[in-house]
Length: 100
Figure 1 (cartoon, rainbow, N blue to C red):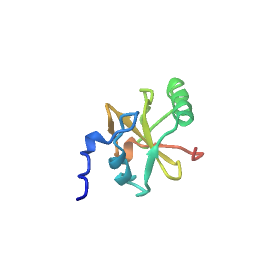
Figure 2 (tube, rainbow, N blue to C red; figure 1 turned 90 degrees about the vertical axis):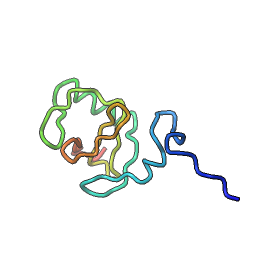
Figure 3 (cartoon, helix red, strand yellow; figure 1 turned 60 degrees about the horizontal axis):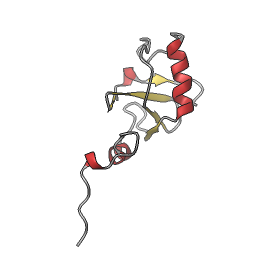
Figure 4 (cartoon, rainbow, N blue to C red; figure 1 turned 180 degrees about the vertical axis):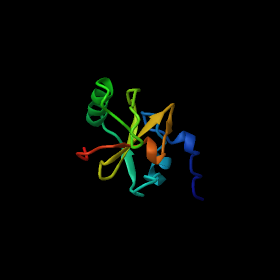
């Protein structure tokens, strides 16, 4: 008999992100898969937050430093994670010009 799957809430990595949910989540604009943003990308974006130059796709400044984010496969769009929830709205995405 097959072992039942653990509920989503039980399948988290050490960052608190649900791995199963991440596997089925995609960018609402490009439909590309998403992956967790790495530390260098977060540090680069947070440097722009600190100097006031980082804006989201709607042109609004990103005022809060990013502790977690998801990024598209091509590295062009970054979706912030706020209070453990990914903000998957097209206008909330941060468009990264260099595709880091």
